Image (cartoon, rainbow, N blue to C red; front, top):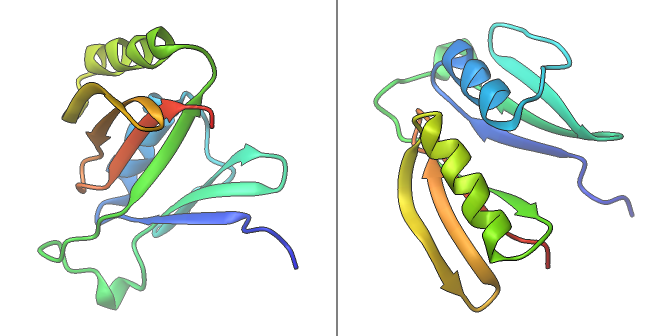
Length: 121
């Protein structure tokens, strides 16, 4: 059986989310469509934003998930990403703190989806 190779995050405003993730992760989309924008994050692995079918998009409906970014290095590496992202103006949900798996913090995208940064397991 194959490993998962497509990770979708639901958003209401694809243009806004594309700009947010392009800037946050310093990556460019593979393609851009009105409702679906994939980013290749590793060979054959896509992280994509998706609004769903146009007739199902309801701005008042919450669409939340949590995406993880594991960074190599010590707690200082996690803190450095936090400082970089705060300088970009992201919404911080959880300030850096220590958990059982190491240093972590959480930010939110414009739709409220969570992005957790932690050390490599």
